Each structure stands twice: as structure tokens, then as C-alpha cells.
Image 1 (cartoon, helix red, strand yellow):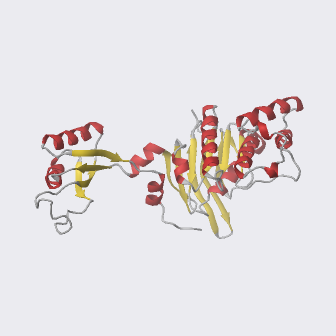
Image 2 (image 1 turned 90 degrees about the vertical axis):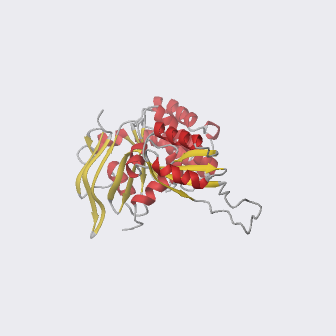
Image 3 (image 1 turned 180 degrees about the horizontal axis):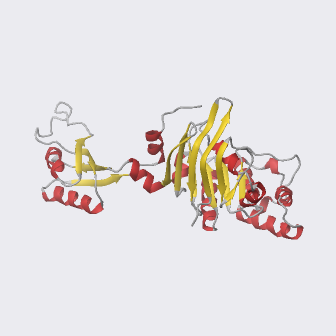
Amino acid sequence: MPPIIETRDLTKRYGTVVALDRLNLLIPAGAIYGFIGPNGAGKTTTMRILTGLLAATSGQALVAGHDVAREPMRVRRLVGWMPDSFGVYDNMKVWEYLDFFAASMGVPALRRKQLVTELLDLVDLSHKRDAYVMELSRGMQQRLSLARTMAHEPQLLILDEPASGLDPRARIELRELLKELRVMGKTILISSHILTELAEMCTHVGIIERGHLLVSGEVGEVLHALQPHKLVEIRVLARAEQALALLPGLPGVRAARRVAPLPDPVLDPARPADDDGPATLNVDYVGDGTGLSVVFKALAASGVPVVHFAEQSSDLEDMFMQVTQGLAQ
């Protein structure tokens, strides 16, 4: 299946400032793609080019195979755009807001009445149908704005910082809504500074800094490429030194070290001098789950009392800190 978003050497300059520098991006259909980067990295510039709101200096941007520069109206029919700010006319009711944008996208009047009801049900705002938009909470306004992006039933949703300013409950509600939209067949490109939120919903991720795409792909594959080895945490009740002597000789173990301090005989004089536990050990391991089971069995067979044995998983924050340098334009 061809990608729903593809950019080829996409470049945008503002005078001497290069906001995007030959960006090559591929996003498959059906993905929730987290677009991550510090302020000024080029996230919003990329999104505005993809929606036809901003012209690129050079390069090409394609949405579902259609060139954004050559077929802007066709692309706008395929894309729902949610900016990071919410704007509305004064004294406009919720249903009027959705009806207005649906009409601006050419949705027939008979269809609009049913569509407004469907969208309000989807974002759980049916009970606010006749409320004034500006009286809604921030979370409700964000859900309404998301409903507006779907007024013309687009294939692709581009959301710029949709969780900004939301309280924890509103962020959870938004996250669950985005997952539901993916089930409905939508592809979602979402930017955010709240990396933990993206980690719980995204299937793919891209990290951009100073207009350069540093890494992109399926979340698990990217994490594995950046950190091919695993960190395994082991807690033992005793015999920590015996475990540290045994571990380096086991297949796949690159290194092992104690992360908890040795017992202090002054602070704990009742403990025997040769008792070096309990302790926590970190193991740098390369291999699969089968190999890890071999490590565990070897420790148990040698009489080391293991009470905890778990692989420490990396997350988007680890990935972000590893590949970025904290540079701004």
C-alpha cells in the first residue's frame, strides 16, 4: 500500500533561516504518527505545507499520491487540519460551529444536519449541542475542534499540539478518541511535547530537529535500532557477588553491575561480613527472550535467590534525549 504522506527533499526557507532542510518523510496509511521535536524544529511548518496553507521553497509533498502544490483543492478534501489554537466567532453555538465548517467544505444542507449529530456523538458533546462554544471547557473545545476537522470526512487528520493545555482527564479522553478514529480507518499525524501521551497511542514516530528528520519508523523498530541491547534489572536476596561473577560468562550478557550500594557493617553490624545481599543488579544484554530464560535458570541453579527479573523498556523520552541535541533555529 502506498504511503498516505510522502515528502521528497522538502525544503522551506525564511530568508537565511532554513526551517525544513530536504525533509524525506513516509507515513503509511492507517498509522498514528507522532511528530516530535523541540520548539522551532519544523513540525508546524511541515504540517502547514501538507495542508496547502504554506508553500514550500523546494521539494515535493504528496498526500495519497496527490501533489500538494499542483492539486491543492484535491488535497484539502483529503485532509482535516486542527491547528494548535482554537478560533470561533462570538455567540456561535456548538451545532452552528460544525454546520458552518461543513457548509464551507461543500457538504449539502440535508447531509449537514445528520453529520452534525454524528460528529457530536463521536466526540461525546451531544449534550452541549446548543451551548455557546466559548462557554465550553478547554477539553471540550479541543474535542469540538477535532470534530470540525472531520466535517468533510477526510482520510488524513493532521493535529498540531492537540493535547496542549488539557488537564489529565481531557488528555485521556482525547487519546481514546484518537484510537477510535484509527479503528475507523483514519490516518493521524500528531505533534506534541507530551511524549508520554504519544507513547501510549502512536504506531509510528518521527523526530525532527532544526529542520532535519533524525529518525522515523514504527515505534518498536526505532527503539530497537537505537538501543539494540536490553537493560535487565535483577534483584537478589543474597549472593550478589556470586551472581556478578557468574553473569558475564552467560550467553548474551555484555556487562553486569551492582546499582545498590554494598551493606555498611557500621550501619548494620548484625549482618554477617560475607552477606552481600539483598542487592539490585543491572545487566546489559543482547538477545531474545529465550536467552533471558537461560540467564534466569543459570542464576537459580547456582543458588542465587532471585526475587525480581525484568527487562527495562525504553520509551519515547529516552529516544528523544538520545537523538536530539537541544538545538533551536
